[in-house]
Length: 443
Image (cartoon, rainbow, N blue to C red):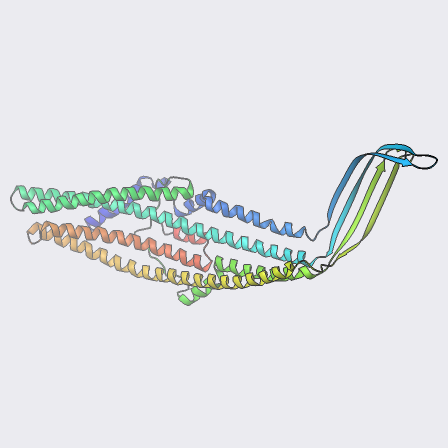
């Protein structure tokens, strides 16, 4: 490895080597994000809430027991018209309690609601799975963004040092009369430009660091980087159509839309069940008591128990049931359209991600070759400058090309890995094992 390329690699690795023992990798950052990310915590709470729909719907199939009690003070006055009118006051207290048990025997709407609740839980599970995959993609992208920002800053600092060296060389040559003042001015202008780029890179690194911190709750002091000679594998299977098929069935959005369509179909049956009769088993047991009354001459206590079937048949509800039926049919058509849209969107995302991976792999190979060529060009220009057949601007341009190529190569590698994660996200099979696989490519 030649001198300039060694400088690039050394600058890029300086921060990593300084704290290599405590450097965080992608897997540890992902675990921190699972525990800290507010968006994922919201998805987890939504899942817990969604799972409660089944016991709520099951309650409509189970018996219900209610207790009612009352106490009343009565003040009455009655007039007897036998052998003359006489007012007879009566003050007494009456109280009682009743326990009622109701067991649905036939309520078709309740059964359909229970089936819908099971499907609603399936939606919650699919949404949570999608949120977990989305967290993986967001965490990896934030991790890669920090690495790229660190690369950009390290490259700017290395280029600044090389340009400063070239500036000093131009000044010395001008002092001894072997170069013109133009060389010094060109080197000074390039040095000032690199200084501005260094400030921008430092600001960008700060921003990207805060974005990662928002996911994990920890400031990214040091992150492990991709190995220098890492070999990126193509997606498996290496067939675009196969990935599209996987996305059209396995994407989280498609699964949610598919189950939503089933719920909409059940809703039509549920609303039509509003025309059906209901049958309940009803049992009651109660006690009532009345204190001493001058009217009755004594207190009265009574107990009563009943059990029987209660049938209810809806006859006319102002057209509400028929209207809800039409509404359910329309919502089912909407669910069909939503499912088609989800499939098409998932297929498009899979195509874009797959092409991003294949294109990225080609770019990586091209930039690797360009990096070697750029280094050779810089060496040649430096030698030509020393012997007087090249001018200072030629060396500066060759340096800029080398550093720019190295930066583009780093970006192409990380963009390819990010596209691979997006491809698996589109297909609905992105998991922690993919994080571990990429983690194995780090230093």
